[in-house]
Image (cartoon, rainbow, N blue to C red; front, side):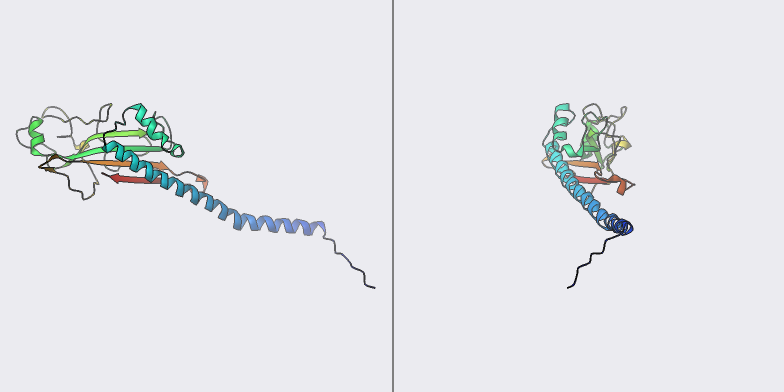
Amino acid sequence: MKTATHRQRRPAEHGGTLMEFVICVGLLWLPIFLGAVQFGLNLIQSIQVTQVCRDSGHMYAYGINFSQSSNQYLLASFSPMLNIDPTGAGGSSVVILSTVQYVTAAQCVAGGYTSTCPNYGLLVFTNQQIIGNSGLHASLFGTPTTDAYGNVAQGTPTTAGYLNQSSALVANYPGISLSSGSTGQQYGYISELYSQNLGLKWLYPGGGWTTSINYF
């Protein structure tokens, strides 16, 4: 008659098995799990940045005045995840909305010039509104001098404005033709949204941005 024998593990063997499990999880599965979490957060953020940038640009082009605090809070409510602070004191995202136009000879004359003006034939800002922390990121296209409502002054031969200020010139604008046609002055609208990357930032020491830009 055979008798069964059981081999008992020594304490050292139990400890070795635990260490193998910890090493396996730490070196293989944990980075995969954290990477999946980071990828998911970035994907969600990218979708929300694209949507909020497009929606705010459409509203701005249709005449919504985002210099008003009520409209700024409305914009911030579109996506709480992006942390857009209407007060401008903090937050991790900034929305920049701009109106640009082509300067014609008629506009120069209306501004008091005899024929042309320094910015004749160029694209200039006539309005720029910033929602969120303006210190986070500047516009890709320029930062004009504006009043409390985001308007850029027209300017005259003796006063500064978009007819003569170099700071009012638009940079990096794509090949979209804006000029004065038979139906009147044509305007262009730009919406930009810059949002600091969310999630496990210690995986990416350099930080980074999720960005969306739209033209109307």
